[in-house]
Image (cartoon, rainbow, N blue to C red; front, top):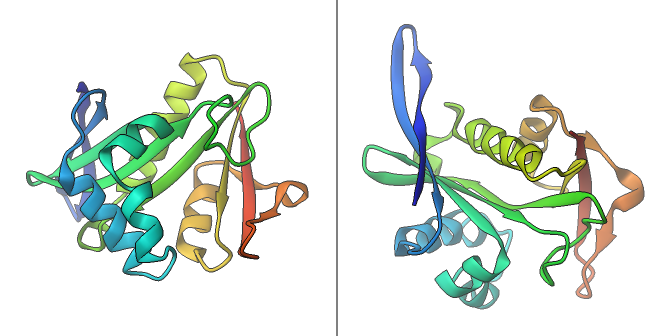
Length: 176
């Protein structure tokens, strides 16, 4: 794991939560798949049978670079950064990287973990020389859309798309 400095997130008055954000290089803990199932299956965004393959350690490693936020010894949030040439990318074009599977445990929502994870992938995208970060989200993911806009993403409606099963996705972009 490539450890980043501890992030102190203010939570109440003058109290802080210590969050460690790590880039997962080799081992992917089972807790990560559990968190993804909690968020995406538990909240109705992904079917359980699709999640089994998509959230396995192997599938996550093949999909992109994974960052994990830990708090109190638990996985609190995750996000993937996907290269343009990865077959799992959805809308990224030349000069772009793509954000996938941003998820924060319900136990840790509302304290800035999602924002900290996004800031980390934005930093990494700049280091890699990307011109833009893009992502897709489901129309019902209102909290996520608000978060994307708070960190600087804007809607890119010309890049909205539909899966083969008819599910619609909204596109967002951030110029770097």
